[in-house]
Image (cartoon, rainbow, N blue to C red; front, top):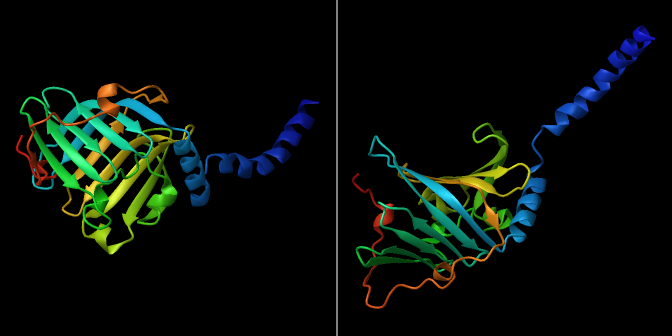
Length: 231
């Protein structure tokens, strides 16, 4: 009986091998787009801790800051940085506002159809089907962080290529929600945002949903966040 069982197992294993391998293979790009978009559509609000690693092409040492990220659909992404960083970033489809509460100073970057269009959410709150209009997408498995697919995007349009080299998005294999997002500028500067545990579809603080600059805060048109800052 044992010999028969072993013989049967040896006959069955070659047939099982292809199916076992297929389970770990990446899905098709079309399937990935559909799953990611479906997961994004279920997220009305999101809140999580984040770590931002900023690497400048002209500086050897990267800067690392932390804070809390808030997202409300495609309405806005809000970054509240922890001390000692005196900074709030509030991004909507039309503008990016930088505010320093202690310094009582603000900066405004308007986002048009062409000018500064690459400063939109880019992977946070946007569907892949939308991003595919501006980027060529390649799908692969990533070891870091574990349990993710890597969506590597290169600019498709001339206006994007003038500003960016790449947009990389790591999505969770189970939830199909972002775990990391990286923007790589044309200059070589890069921003890597690592997301902590996600709180989905819970009420956001009123100070975030109703974010407005205090009256009397002057707004500069130049945006120093994207300029090289000394450590």
